[in-house]
Each structure stands twice: as C-alpha cells, then as structure tokens.
Image (cartoon, rainbow, N blue to C red):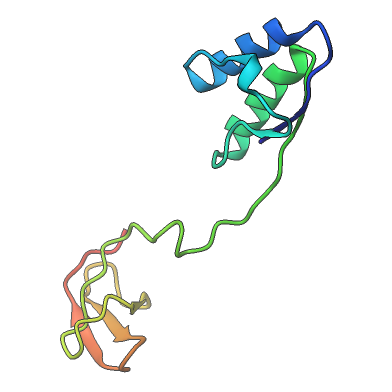
Length: 119
C-alpha cells in the first residue's frame, strides 16, 4: 500500500493515520512521496490502512500482488525423500482416511510410504 499524495494543511492528520498504521511516530518532514506504507500485508490490512489515509485526506493506492510458493512456503508437514533427502515430495491423497499416504519425490521420482497424517 502506497501513499501517493498529501494535501496541504492535512499533514498532522496524515501523520496520525500513519502512526495508527505503523504503531510508531512518523515525522512528516522525512516523508518523500510516494512512500510505501505497507510493503507486505493482507488485502484486508491494506484496505483498512488505505481507508485511514483517505479519511485523513491523503491519496493511497493498493497493489494486488500474487505470492508464490517460494515466498509463502507450504506449512503442511512433508517428510524427506528416503532416497535423495529432498523435501520436494508430493502426496497422493487418494488413500483412505487411516491409510499411510503414498509419496513421490519430485526430484528423483522415488515412490515411498509416509506415516505423516493428512490434515
């Protein structure tokens, strides 16, 4: 979320809105437009911050950015491949509810069973 414009005479209101967003005091003499207020935030957080700045009289833009798996890693438990030790394994979830999950390494292609419970 980026602050792109501050109208003359509304600097104090913008500073207060920035303090509420960032939880720290902001000196308006240090602000050089455009300024990135939130580099990474959820859509709800960015919209709420944008609404605060617009209510204070500023102009703010929210840019939608897709997050890749490299930046937001999969938090599910995955075992390592017993053949090559890679963590790049893929579960085959067609097994029954209490069955051990079949896994395949995406690096070496090794098939193995895992006792890691599915969620």
